[in-house]
Image (cartoon, rainbow, N blue to C red; front, side, top):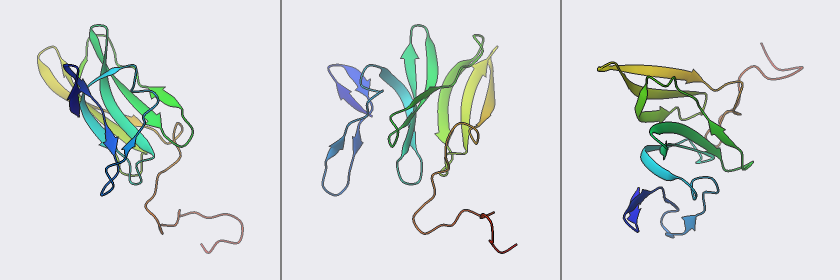
Length: 129
């Protein structure tokens, strides 16, 4: 997160080159907090302020898709954490003065993002048991 024009802005920057990587969907939103990346950086998750609510968003940089994860109106998102393989997202929420963690199973929504050289278990036809 960096501050630009008085607003907290999500910035993804390659290292060591310093090249700034454009995030299509976060440009028009003011990220509030808690950016999180998958293993390869394919998925970027953050909380953004939309009206009076903080909303978890996930951008798939490979496909350009944006995923908005709805929370009940009585819960305020505080921070989030994306699993390295992008299969789950944990969102810390405040509800009626108490802290809770709401977990999202993203298996049906996102492809797994695995680090280089890691094989997906289960294979296809002819794979060893």
